[in-house]
Length: 234
Figure 1: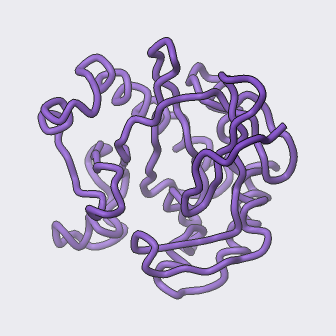
Figure 2 (figure 1 turned 120 degrees about the vertical axis):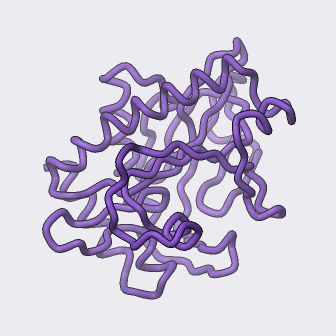
């Protein structure tokens, strides 16, 4: 089904198919941190992320969140709708951690009074700089209507993910997602939701079950990702 390689990112590849409205997305075993400054290849990581994301996207679709996922093809490849990616990284923070804690001097693990919605420009060369709504509109990265739809869908995703992970004994600290436009202008959740793009902590012990293990040199992410998959498929 795969035809031409259209794009290769840090963790996934995108291929054309015989249908101009469908692509194949392939998960890679590569893992990076710091916009690619730290790299490794961990056999089996791609399969785990593919399986985890498929479970999450199926749950979201069942709850009315439109996604690019059409169907899984095998352990590494999924069939997706063709979209033009909106060049924004959309971040939700439920608990202070990572760069938020560093920027604002808030102890990591401190609960926030309300979820925080943030945007960054999707541009590794510029270091993914933060953006506000007015900057997004002024730079013509999205329309006012698109930004409103992205914000609404993002907060709905957060509302669904918190209890989804909680029932498996995990706290959703924060996450990053991306959206795409279909040829007819519809906004869809695209890319992935995996331990690469979420901070997930064990609800009882606080143990990290995400890419921070690699990012901070704290342990084996493969074991953690296997545990996440086990929990979300119980």
